[in-house]
Length: 547
Image (cartoon, rainbow, N blue to C red; front, side, top):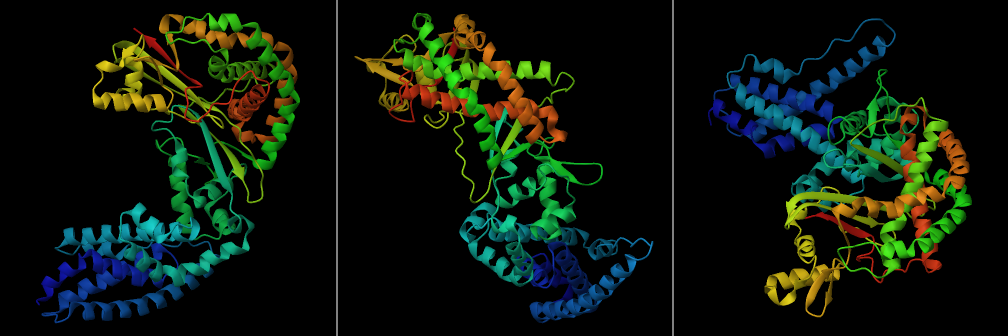
């Protein structure tokens, strides 16, 4: 073929993948492999220009590649010597110019070379991703292929190309306690997660351990690389990801002016959390006694509430009140804590807050945490406004989370339509199937041939009265708040890093959440609550409707 025609082979993804694999196998990092690969491309372009005909392009290309690598090795050795010398001088090392960028200036086929350049950069990232997922996250090659959208054979080829080079770096991890027995982070959060949740960027073990190392100590990329025994390119890329988060503004890490990185949220070790729980347990018995007395004293008031769904079981209603009662207690604690100890601290305001629990291999921790997610919609199902909330935790599973679209949830739409009663005979076969599923998950109940909401349904006009059923509990707990505030202040001083003191309220929220679980279990033992027959149930779910 004519020499000019052979440039099309340089734009072939399979050839570039093989070429990058050749370079990656012989280099210590993906960035260095990019340099070698671009050197080979430039040498090929120059050689092609000097030829009239090329009989076998691939034979020609690999001959050039071997020659360039030999030169590259000599230059690398020389460059390393220069760097060593530079450490003892005041001279600045000059920035190296990417040879492809330099060559483009004089090449008439710049578009093709730009595509080649982009492909090399893309391959560099793909090789890094494969390495991290296989060696650090311990993913199977089939799972890596699915995640990256490439063939499993491609994953194996890239692992083979890189294994000899990267294995030495990865095996060093076995000499460190952290990577031999990695930390696992359990994340919780509060606020509006939609588009603001940095937790989704830290699902990998590698990400979690890098973040954990910065939990109360600012560290440089070099320090993190040394501690994790992971090559710098991996560290630098991961730091960028963790600083950006999901929305580009709130990540799990933040970069300081001294080019070090530190945690942007509170992380508490399992052993420390167990200590916090021990401190709280001193007050749990008295708190539960107050909860039981409050529910008993207000039983008639609770049963007389004008629910839009028929409710006659105070134990069932109490499932939606107890968590709100504990949160009312927690709000009272935060109020007194702020007034007594943190009046001069300006609380950080965010759309979403993250909190983390760090679990080591032999740690024993039982997080009896209960959470609550709420969703809303307007002008739907014949209502002007809908708000729905569900409590979830050890005993009951979540029906929906923040961001759930009510208008596209047939079960919820059926529940709204059943307010006041819905005749089964008016339903189509498809609607009957939806109704059956709504009964199964606890949204609906069937009486005779009519469907009614099983969950609590409240008229918006009575919303304040409903909230008062749990909020009024705070009037009965003043004598318990003060001593617990003093105890929590001591825990904050012990476990919240100074740079995160403006998030002390998150420490209170996420550590006292355990009280909800303790209260629920004790109330079940004492007959104040009953244990749901299934975790997929109506208990702890309510809906407020404005007609």
